[in-house]
Length: 200
Length: 438
Ligand code: HEM
Ligand code: FES
Image (cartoon, rainbow over all chains, first blue to last red; front, side, top):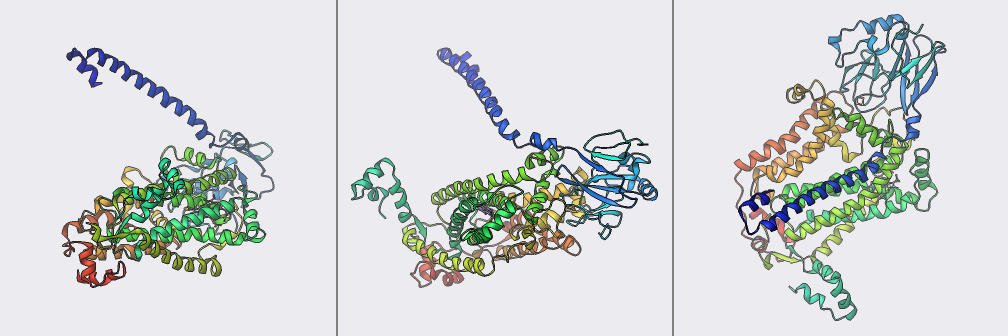
C-alpha cells in the first residue's frame, strides 16, 4: 500500500488517497471473499471425483480359509484389486522371518506384517505391484516366482519374497498387507483390522 | 496487396451489412492477403495436415460416441457392436483408431521440422509453447481414448499410467484414488475418462486457434530461417499454399486410407481385443507406439543405475519417482528449448554441426521408441539408460555448447535473393538448389 504512505506527505491529495486506501481494502477483502467463494464452489466438483459412498461400502471381502491346504495359494478380489492368500508351512514362514532387515529395501519383519504363529501361516497381501500396479505372477504353481520364491512382476521385473517384500527391481515398497481379521472358525475378513496376535 | 477494408467493402449489400456488424468477411479475406514466405517446402504441409486430422477425429469421435457405452460392463461389447452391427461402424472406428496414430506421425514430423529449421526461436517462442501445450493435450486425449474400448491393454495401460501419480511423496495414494474414483481403475474411471476424452479435443481446438493467431502475428519461418523483409520475399497464402496444402492432403489421405483399409490393426495391440480383466496382467504391456519413447525413459530409471544413484537417490527420491519426473521432463524441456539453443541462426542448413546433432537426436528418439517396446531385461535396460541420458544431454549440454562454438555458414541477405539467384522464379520448387550454393 505505497499510496497510503504517500498520502501522509502530499496534503492536497490526501482526501483522495484516503479514499484510495479504503478502496484498496475493499478490493482486497472482496478479492479474498471471492476467492473463498470460488474455492467453496469448486470443491464439490473436485470432491465428487473421490470414491463414492457405494464404492466405499464394498469395503470387506470374506473368505473361508478351511479348504486352503498348506502350500496352496488363492486369489480373491477386494475393492476391485486382487488379494493374494498363501497358506505357508512353518518352514516357509520361518525362512521369511529369518531374513535380516539390512537386506530389505523397505525394512519390515515378517511378524510386523502377519503376526505370530499360528496367524503367520496365513500370508495376506494386496496383489498389486507397488511399482505401477501390475499383478505379479506367482499364485499359480507353474508361475515364475522370481529369485526369492514369492512373486515376480512381469511388467518391469520387480521380485517379492515369501513375505511379499520387495527384494529386486523398480518397486519401492513391499506388497501392502490389507487390514484383515481371522475369526475363530477360520474365516478371513479382509478390510477389517484385528490386532496381530495369535488367533487360537 | 489490397487492404482488408477493400474486401469488406463488398458489392453485395447483405455481405456488407453483416460485415459491418461482425467483420467475419474481413476475417476470411485475411487468408487471401496473409503473406507467406515464397520458399516454403513440403515440411510446411504438416501443420495443415494436423488440423485436418483433428477435424477427422472430432467428426468420427462424435458419431462413435452415439454408439458407445461408457460402462465397464458394457463398453467392450458396445465397441464390438460398433465393429459388427452399426452401419459403417467398422469404418468409423478404424478411421478414429488409426487417425490417432496419423495425428501423432503428422505432429511429430511437424515438431522435427521446427527443430531442424529453428522455428522455436525468437519471435516464435509463444507459438512454440502453444504447440507443446497441444502435444500434451493430445497425449492426454489419446491416452484416455485408448482406455474406452476397455480391453486388456486399455485397462492395464490406464492402471500403469495413473499409478505414475502414486510416486508423488505423501499424497500419491490420495491422488490416485481421486483419479480413479475408487481403489483401482474401474467403472468410475472409465466414465470420467469418457467425459474428458470428449472434452479435450475441443480444448485442443481452442489452443490451435491461439497457435494460428500467434503464427499470423509473427508469420511463418521458412527453410532459410531468414525473416521476410518485404513483398519480394512473400506470396499470398491463397491460392499458392492452399493449393500446395491441398496436394499434401491428397497424398496424406492415400497413406491414411491404405492403413485403414488394408492394415487397420497393424499399429494396434491384439491384446486389446481381450476384455479387461482386473485380476490378470497381460504378459507384455506396451503402450501405443507414439508413447514408446517416453515409456522407455520412464523404465530406464532402476534402483541400481549409476546415474540414478549419483543424481537422485541421495536426496531420497525413489527410482519410480525419478522415472516419472524424467518422463515429464522429456516434454517440458521443449518449453525452454528457445533458451537452450542460443544460436542466432535458425535454419539447420547453415549450421554444419547442429545439422548432425539433430540427426543423432532423431535416431536417439527412434531408438528409445524401439526400446520402449522391449521387455524390461538386459541388454535393453542398459541401452535405454544411455539413450535416455543422450536425450537430455542433447538439450541441456549439446545445444547450448554448439550454439557457442559453431561457426554458421553465411546467410543469404533475403529470401528473394537466395531463391531468385538459383534461377527459379517459381515459389517453392526452386528452393532446394540455391540452398546448396548459399
Ligand atoms: C484429439 C483428437 C482425438 C484423439 C487423439 C482420439 C484418440 C482416441 C483413441 C486412441 C481411441 C481408442 C481407439 C481404439 O483403440 O478403439 C479413441 C476412442 C474413442 N474416441 Fe477418440 N480421439 C479424439 C477425439 C475424439 C472426440 C472429439 C470424440 C467424441 C466427441 C471421441 C470419441 C471416442 C469414442 C466414443 C471412442 C471409443 C470407441 C473406440 O474405441 O473406437 N474421440 N479415441
Ligand atoms: S508394475 Fe510391477 S514392476 Fe512395474
